[in-house]
Length: 135
Image 1 (cartoon, rainbow, N blue to C red):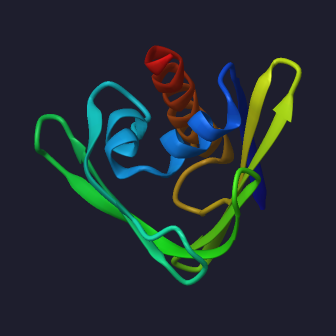
Image 2: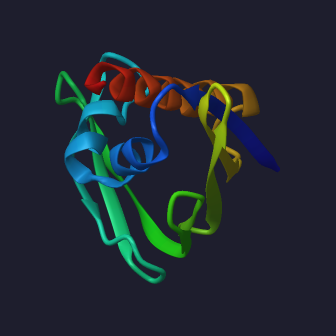
């Protein structure tokens, strides 16, 4: 099943794209809640390139790597990637109200669809706040 989340960022497309694809930025916004953070990020933004974000609980009790391979890149428009046996697409579209960032991803069986939607939406909301704070 595919799940979709989205936000509209009030910033120019080049700023939105850069914040989404730059490791230093990713470390600042990539968390679903205040008790998690991203301690390391790497990005090889090209088709066939790899990415990895190390996500850890702030109390040090657990962590995991979110990693995969970029399968399609259209600058300022689209990022497609695979992670494990799942895939995701990030679409960027300029609108009169800013840049709409829409993430569509394959669900997984360990968590409910609602839990997955809420978690990914929280990360995207953090992304929006991060870009807004940089303006």
